[in-house]
Length: 321
Image (cartoon, rainbow, N blue to C red; front, top):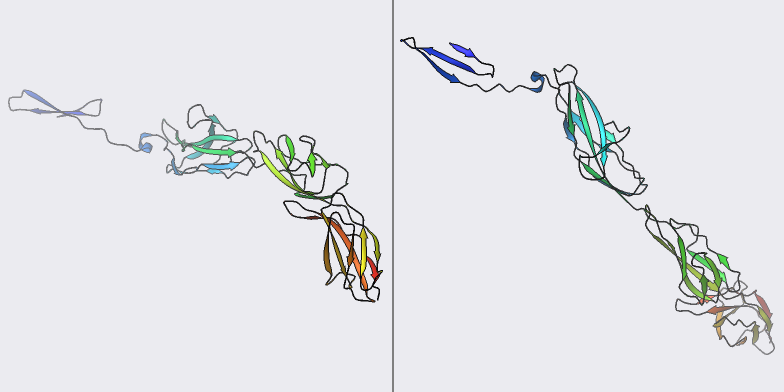
């Protein structure tokens, strides 16, 4: 005889010839039932996990995405969570983030952690109609963006004697200015006002301090201050095959270039130099009865090369025979 008990086991009783009962108890393990057989919604299976990512401030982010499947015909719902630490504890739900994909914000610098809770709802199940599964936690890092300085050119060329001017650079954070050579130009550290002091080349460095979302930034402005435009004061041929050229003295110049030739566009022209102490030169071995075109310019020497001023107006003269 088999007697069933409340704990899914049974007792087997056999009767001997003497009719005295002997009980032998056998315990049978419960059969393993599926969630559907047990009346429970199926736990979702995540087939694709979200992946960590890194961006700079303001850079468009790619969506965090998961893929999920269930076989019991249930309805899947999603809710993304974020946290300041790599943990499921103390996380907060992201408002409106209830799809299989969520695009994180890059509007502030720092690292946040995200995961998605997937809920399977099956109304045809028995006592347990929902089942949940958490995705992996992934980090999204947002670093400071580059600080691009605008509002100023990379190269500036001025003529000695020009009025002071002001640089108006724009960048994130406070902007400051420094000059590499105060004998050429000075610049107000905070105002950006530039005063011309001499001829030559200098570099003005512009710095933007940055802020919580932007790195510090730097821009270098190459400044060239050229000598003034020269002027020929006299051009005469008073002796055979020669021409005497005179010009104005420039106290800021280190020397002068004199260019001359028979072509008014100076094709094939020759060039001679004069020291800064000179204000005239005699051009020799010229062709008699030929008209020569002449122009003069000043230059300033520096460790970074010569800086040339503008040529004077072209003048011409007929060479004496």
